[in-house]
Length: 192
Image (cartoon, rainbow, N blue to C red; front, side):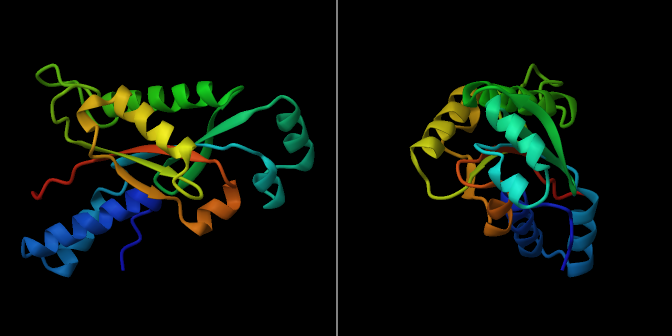
């Protein structure tokens, strides 16, 4: 077992990467070493629909939840490695979505180097060496479908090939229904 600090769709990609390395003849120790050395090669942003579940789980105080609900705050959380932090607070779902798309664009360029060679960028028509993913709580509803379309419109090179899954129950029970997320993962290179 390898704890490479990933969750949800980024963890799924780590499993797919491990399978690819095993198929290429890598032994378990080498696969483990590669997964650990690339553990921070991903970034995730999640927008919550409600503060109720964060309050219920003790992650925020009832006063903060009440004020946030009154102001209709839509928190945007970020996960980079094993740390979950508040990234920003939005007033509407639309602004939360825009914040997440902008954050992923920034990470594509600043953290993962997309856009630095041959004019490539995370949202270009070229292969940028990244995998984009999306996640959502609950069923694949109209909300998740519209989020998928918005991501594909923002990143046309990734249209039709988003890594997409519902968030696990262990995450969903803490953030509640209606949450949506986006992530990017640097593609694994089979070199040392």
